[in-house]
Length: 380
Image (cartoon, rainbow, N blue to C red; front, side, top):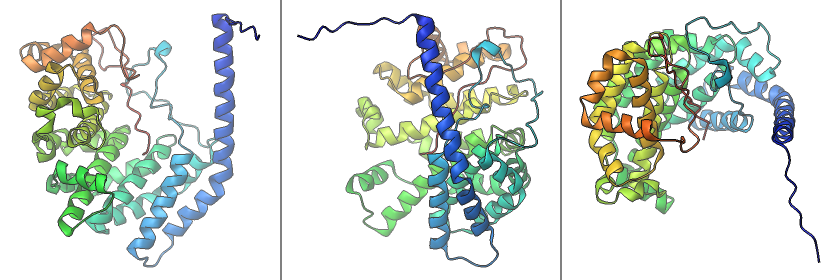
């Protein structure tokens, strides 16, 4: 008979073991990034080569580059701020070193201007039904660019790319039921259905891109000027949710349903709203972010009434609560609105943050800006 004994390790020992494992993982990831750096540089040089390439060749190149970047995905220091540091965004960000120890980052930084010009041209010229691929690749490249001198972000901010994507959002139209039905079938059955799928993919890619882009100061400024959050509030895709969300609210947690697809997209938009509340002049956007949540009040009311736990509801609660703590001018607006006040109270009453969504609460409402809200969109 085997004598099974439970060995309880002291807390300090567990922490040291976890730290050691994390160091090993970081070392492996660093070596992987170092190993793939020459291949990544060759692919960058390939798509920067002058001359016409057919759309299919470009798309395959984008997908390959995205696969490499997703495999080597590494969280930015800007994505997660140590709670112990109590760091507040005051605009005084320490400039990155001229040369990083990460070869992938160095490649993006060294070729940043050329990459940005190429992305600018392709986002403008590539057909709409294939545009999602280049937008998502841009998102992944910006993730690396944010670790250095933000050359890609700064160039794109001065270009017409953000405006083009805002115009694309305004023109996007699709049906949640058609999109999810096509996913279940695993194929696209007609031209109309194909158009819905393409619009849906472009919709998600732009939401993801904007959230990443807003992490840079230049990106935040241009998205503020373009009133991106107000565009979200007027989009048919958001203000006309699938009927199943009200008839069968529990389906928001069932993959492959219209309600789940809607909730996933809404969570991305709310992450963008959170990101817009992380810069020095965030109070210029706080009322607009609340207006977006307020516009979708019926959705949040239904989810709370049905006692549904889902990411988009938790993100909305955290956003409203964070603003209520840090923007005194809007306390009356929040408490005077039934939905916003419900969301605030629900977040306030929670003892443990659910879904591992880490939010750093600044309990001093007199500060100029809230602590960095957790908003890491891993490429998918």
